[in-house]
Amino acid sequence: MAEANGALLGNLFFEPSTRTRMSFDAAFCRLGGRVCDTTGFQFSSMAKGESNHDASRVISGYVDVMVVRHPQMGSVKEFADASKVPVINAGDGPGEHPSQALLDLYTMLKELGRDLSTINGLKVAMVGDLRFGRTVHSLAKLLSLFKDINFTFVSPNELKMPAYVVDFLRERGHTVKETSDLIAGVANADVIYSTRIQEERFESIDEAQRFKGCYAINRAFFDRYCDAHAIMMHPLPRDNRAANCELNNDLNDHSQLAIFRQTDNGIPVRMAIFALVMGVEKDIEKTFRTVGFQKRLIGA
Image (cartoon, rainbow, N blue to C red):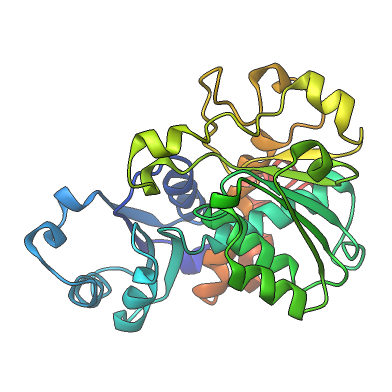
């Protein structure tokens, strides 16, 4: 779009990322902008002791919008408070990942053939590391905006969904069940949302290893215990090691495995986010049409 031509994105990733970083990159470039990347503390002045406040205030003078990922919960808000330009949260430690939640909701609507008026009553099973998995925190809060969502949280006791999220959902009138039983947890679910064990957030690798593979789903398990219409989702990356894989590789060609379509959906969703925060949303449809990938990306 003309209004985004020449605009600069500051893509600040102080924690490892492949999909999210490249997805934001690609989305901004498709809108006609350019990207300035920073990856890792060691390549930034924050390695010299610079504060989030100072880094944000300085960089916001160079770019038109920032995307920030940081390992500390609450850090992205510090960037936003100091910035002169819009700041988009790409993940703050074990806290939130709001753009992932938006693309996850978009994926659910497309895969299940629903819209925002018919998502009420959805049955969602979230499985795995719900304590440190920021994607499920944001997704649960987003789904709470609808009515009568049935949440089932499947995890070891040590990795349960944070109590403040559970309490929030119940206060909004939703049904929440917590269990450590995978078979019972996925029964009758419309959506099975698996997560990997967030090894990097444990005090030791040995502690994390205790939980690896404890909620793995393979083709035989899905066919026996899950509804045939259920879709399988995952924010990725999967741990593809055979003993650990949350959604086994034998599901890769299964029609109900939505994980790769899910990542594809990140492009149009993040394009829309940029268009909104930069105030050029009126031109988004024209842009899709002009570059010729509207149907491929948004199913129009």
